[in-house]
Image (tube, rainbow over all chains, first blue to last red; front, side):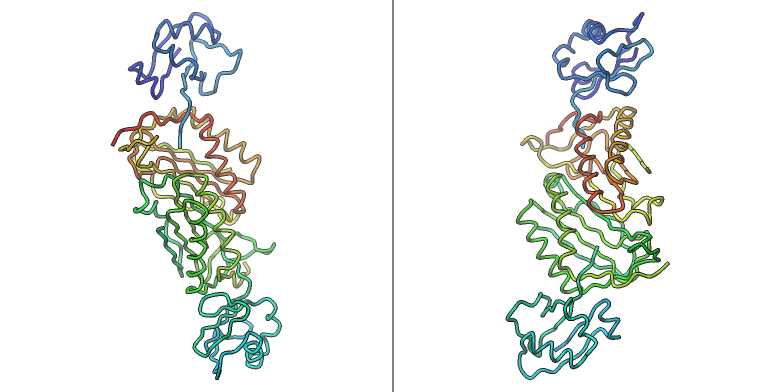
Length: 79
Length: 79
Length: 130
Length: 130
């Protein structure tokens, strides 16, 4: 599973992506558990981040598989 | 006094301007009397035309002097 | 307030960017181009012939710009209009307004286009049939 | 509906005219350019650094275009956005909408800019101090 970081989150982590091996699809809560284990600094951003899966905003009940591209999206501010 | 015609009025009259000699300033009614005597075909347009004097819409009570430029303006339709 | 009014006998030029004097101050540059459509009052046309009374049109437009600037934080206005034959698919009018923020720029530009049609001496003098 | 979405590392190009396929059908081409202002949250800046998640931004924008086209007679949309450093006085975004008439084009363009700020993954990632 590819994990993408953007904007101030990418800056805080000092990286734009991570690779995460998951044996079976994860719920949102399970995914966050893995993410926080990998990058503890994400904790302070969690409340403001939206998850996207393969270029769509994740919906309640979605699961995240090893082949997915997962993006952690801060509040947008284009224009 | 220079008289300017535009759009369908200029087309109907076959001309874009006239020169009118006036001995003293004319009221709107007196001006129209002179205009209709000069160009009877204006009669059918009179109700839809606005008068302008020196690049401003004429106001009630304005008079029109020999040195003025008077424009007969059909309803506008720019854009 | 920066302003520019021009009338063109031939094709309107490409749109220039935000005028230099208001760069840094204005975040919004709302623009409008009005194009001649293939039908006018239900009939297919080749184009429209426009007429302008330039001296008075410029005076009326300037008055409208000033009234808009009193109601919105407008810092620059550009207004161009074609005269003579404008063929289907060509632009007859271009107007643009700069202000610090987006919503005021849109509101002022929409109002300018409405005001144009009230008393600015410009006419669609003739529709040329297709 | 004709559409174009592009992201630019460098200065946005000049605004092209109404797209060829909708000429004759559309009388209105409403455009917006958003420029970087000299101050951000009260502090003087040199510029803003933008980031885009391009694949998802394109997907979200396309969804917004389709929703707008269901509500307004929108026939063409062009959307450009800068990425990376955009200096004060430079344009960060350009959006334009074509429709048969003026009012719908303005309404749809204003709504597109509002929608941009709801869920399209583009960020002012950093303000660079002056």
